[in-house]
Image (cartoon, rainbow, N blue to C red; front, top):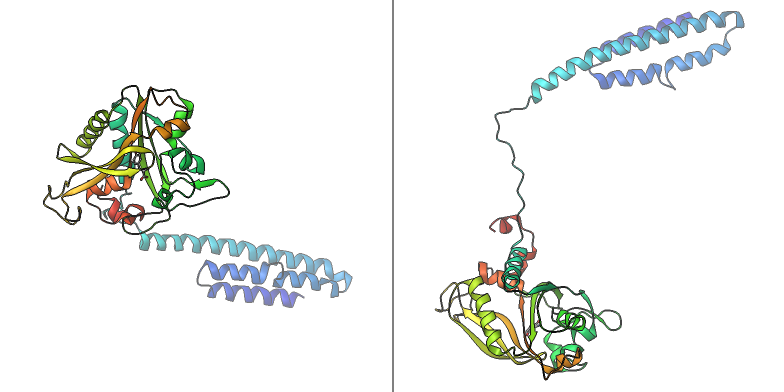
Length: 337
Ligand code: DAH
C-alpha cells in the first residue's frame, strides 16, 4: 500500500509538471481527486488489507489526498494569474479606436405623413374616430350602399373571414359607426390599416387610409372643395389642382382630386406617368342612402366625405416609386427620412 501511495505521488508530480495550462490542471484534478479518480480507487482497495494495517494506510491515503489537492490549488492560482496577465497583454482594448455609435431610431415615413395629414384636419376642427380592422360586411359594404353582388364590390379585392366578417377594405365603415353613435353636425377623420388582396409595386395587401366626413345643415360641394384645397395646399404647397368626376357608391356626386405634379410642375415625368397630375384623394357628397342607413334626416342634413391612401401620399411626397420599400425595413432606405 505504501508503495502505491508513493507511486501516485510521483505520477501526480510528473503530470502537474507537464501541465501546460489550467485546462490540463483540471484534467489532473479529475484523474487523481475525482469521484472515479486514483485516490478514490485506492481508498476502496483498503478493504483488501488485513484489518490491523487499514488504519495506518487510510491515514496515509488521506494525507496524500490533502497534499495533492493543496498542490493543485496552488498551481491553479499561479497559472491562472499568469494566464490572466497574458490575456490582458494581448487583448488590451485600444481606447483610441473610434467607437460604434448606436443608430438613432426615427419616425417611419408612413407614420410621419399620417401624423401630418391628421394634424391638418385636427387643426380645422375635425375629431379623430376609430373602428375595427376586422369588420362586419354590413359596415364595410351594405351600409355604404354596396349590397351583396353589387358590381362595386369588385372594386376592392376583399379578404373574407368567417360568416359576415371581412378585413376592412377601406376606412369608410368608420363613417357609419360614428354616425350611429352621434347626432349631426359632425366633422370626423379616421386613420388606420386596411386590407386588400393585391400586391405589386404600387399595391400592398395592407396599407393605411385616412377617411373624412362632414355632416351638417347646408353643407355643400363648395365646403368640400374649400376644405380639400386647404388640405392640399398645406400638404403639398400652393399649386394648380382639379376635381375629376368619378364614382363611389357612398357619394353622389363623386370626384377625384388631382394636384399638379410636385416633381415636374406639370411637364410630365416618371412619377406622374407623364400626365403632369397626381391623384391625391377620392371624395364626394354623401349619398342619401348612407344617411338612411344611419337614420339621419336626409331632408335636413347633407355632408361630404373623402378618403386617401397614406402610403400613396408618402410616395408622392418623397418621390418613392415602389410601395414595398415602405414595408421592407431596409435601414439604408429608412435613414433618408
Ligand atoms: N373608400 C374609398 C376607397 O377606398 C375612398 C373614398 C372615396 C372614401 C370617396 C370616401 C369618399 O369617403 O368620399 O377607395
